[in-house]
Length: 85
Image (cartoon, rainbow, N blue to C red; front, top):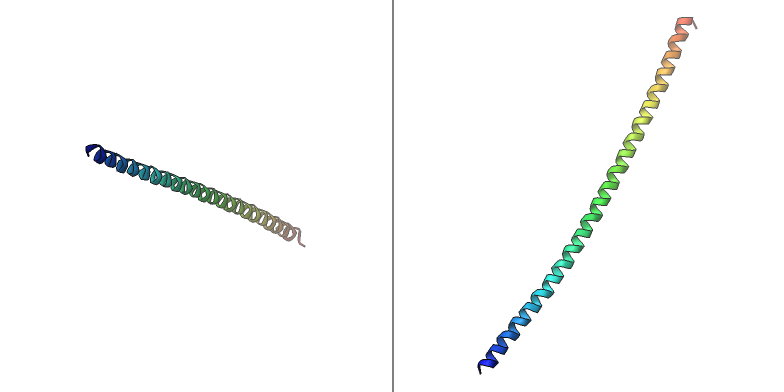
């Protein structure tokens, strides 16, 4: 009788441990998926920031070129005024 009760207790414990191991594997898989999602989001954010930086740099270059052209035009007008044209 004791052996039967002991065997039942051992079987119940084994089933409980097996269920815990399966649940731990599921949690581990979910954690891996979440980490992969976080990596993808970080990569997207980095790409977006790099694109925004490139666009801002291009805007600065364009503005500098426009300012240079305006300064050259103003200098030419001033020179023409001094020359009496």
